[in-house]
Amino acid sequence: MAAIFAFRCSCCGELHEGAPSIGFDAPHHYAGLNETERETLATLGSDLCTIDHDEGRDHFVRACLEIPIHGHGDPFIWGVWISLSAENFTRYQELPDPPPPGESYFGWFSNRLPGYPETLNLKTRVRPRGDNLRPWVELEPIDHLLSHDAQEGLTVARAQALAEPALHPD
Ligand SMILES: [Zn+2]
Image 1 (cartoon, protein in one colour):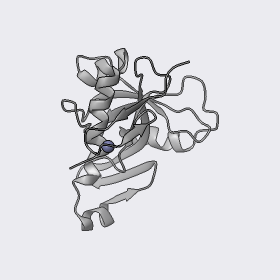
Image 2 (cartoon, helix red, strand yellow):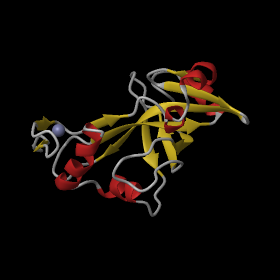
Image 3 (tube, helix red, strand yellow):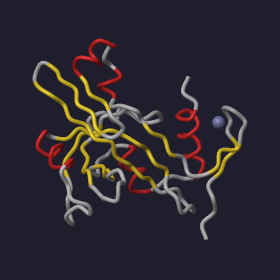
Image 4 (cartoon, helix red, strand yellow):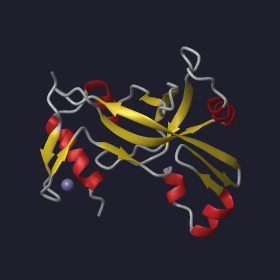
């Protein structure tokens, strides 16, 4: 049986148990809006977000990027936002449960992950999985550290190094 992931945190000194799961409450684009803009231009829920701008409207869904941790059964999970086309955003919300086999959409990665080079606008594929679970997101296999990690998995030391600043921002 795979060991439970746990580490003594060099930030807070506590033992953090369980594979890290680090989520963003909103797309990066939302964080850049002031309070008035948030009220007038954006809608933000736990799983869906839209933001109006000069050229139209952006549509975001929250998804799970799961990265295996070597020697552990549970993955490192990033809860991130992905920008979909208007058409796919609507289709996603109207999906039956379970979704049709092979259902997936192109999307743009819409958060900046600490510990990585720029991750905004990486190309992804979003795969709905039904059962009230957030969809999986897969990165296009390109020469980027995040794409590499998603393919190869993380060492325990690297998972810890990524988790600590994300668990303790500032
Ligand atoms: Zn800590």
